[in-house]
Length: 271
Image (cartoon, rainbow, N blue to C red; front, side, top):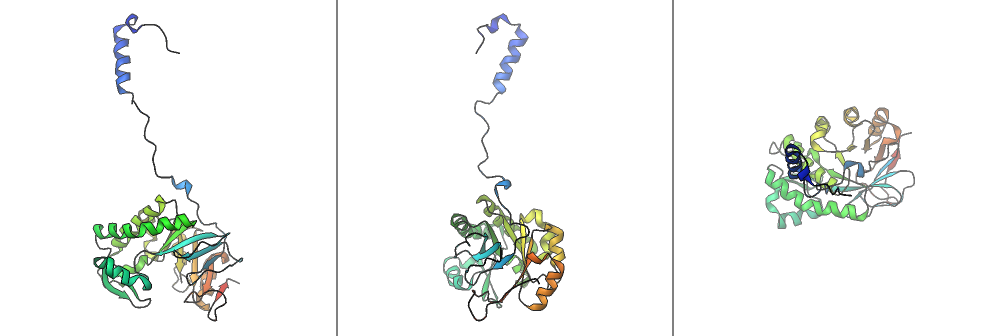
């Protein structure tokens, strides 16, 4: 209840102080931030086995984490990670990029996968690429995926010197921020040499390929602790990775990542 006592009965100095305080008090409460805090994002469960299902989804009760392409649906009952190609074109989307955004292509093809490198050499082009990709991220979130993986962070190493590590760091930082706006944690995919810049790139865990084969597993663990999972593509790589990471963190798949039931399908875990 407001006092009925008039301020005119108070000493002039007190009246002046009260007036100053009233002038400094904001008329409206502070604006609440619109972005969710990082605590709203759920990281992959440590101790859960991984399956990498980019060639087509299928049930797998032996694992707790499943990665699928953004055009697929999340795996029911699993921690589901949405795969997006953040630095190169998907082979079936190259013509679309050439038609709609030709100046965002570097003009260099990753011949191993028939993918063209995106031109991330300038801030303006990086921003435009994110504008293309962010709706795909939003779709991953709407579908119910729990996290995202942006492939080909290491594409700068295949650019014939036209792209740099700094370009890659700047690009993944933008993609990470976009994913976080949709409350999705982000996997660092390969590029172990950038682990030391984790704070800059904004990634939350690792999905590596062949860290056993290339003796890189320890480098990822140094930056991310237990939040490291690895995909190997041959028996020696599986053996090496299983000796460097917890057994639950490693899976061997066939190189084409075919679905279960196909003749070339391979799914193996550490013994």
